[in-house]
Image (cartoon, rainbow, N blue to C red):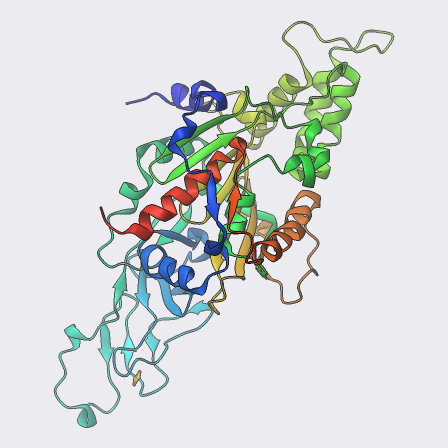
Length: 451
Ligand code: FES
């Protein structure tokens, strides 16, 4: 068993980017996989109806009878918390003549189909039928709702449409579970940003966009001050279908002295809003290095980065979050986690931002639905008070994302427009985009079918 201390340092010790064996990856990606209806149909059958996927948060359904619908292409499922506290998933179809049982989300003691009033318990059992005299002999035990596997990890609800799916824990693998455990994601709450809207791009364009840092040079030039994009410092780790990447977070303009480094940290909340709560402690730590005449000088081993790490550790500890199993790097560096097929998350101590994209229910491969949610660790007493409700954006372009996200939001549909040009047959990936190659390799493996 690996110790937490070793796990927290794992990414700091894994392979550096230049050490990867790039011959393992196909760096040419065919463009029709972003635009072809036939390709998307293949994905539907070989991936989406067979894999574990995030469908919500456990704390969305806290009480007995709380339920929500999950739509996938033309498929619909309902997830409900039973009287025994267990979350279950069912195909959202009445077993009489197939009527859809429910839409959206709600609270129920049982599900009653509005067509002919057959009723089902929260555990899916058929409880009663209207006018049994008109129905005739019926084995109720054989007419319960069709169940699909549902499980949870790190506070997220996962559903697999395949009733014969292997357990979620097998799909995630032990490394993913152990490496993410110290962050205590299950205790985090959506705060500030919790948005879902349709985007005019294929779902994989979103995954690709958040799988590489190379586009920072063109789309987010302001981030170059705080994210180290040197090949010799970036690290990657791959676990089964999933993976993690990390570029160190550091005020990083050559020749910056202490004052300029500190100023760089002060500007961070524009892009990373949650840094704001750490700044008061950061300023205290900085002040300790000023001489009587106000000059700022850092001793060897101290930089604005190390003071930010200390300020983050102190601030989170004072809030009540035990960060003893997290390394100093995890206080400052965003790790970019990807869980196949569509879950991307940047995470550092005390906070995470999750971006998911799913194929659009209308089946158009040029569209998808994305959901972006920022999570912050809060003491339990504050969680329900500060929880951000999900905002469904109806008018494209009307939601004010923070700067970096707005830049990505505008970029992705632009890429889809270019991908639709038929003369462009393939993409040529840069080595820094190796996570994209890895993702598409996993897609291809599913499309090829069981070995
Ligand atoms: Fe549901 Fe008839 S279809 S009761």
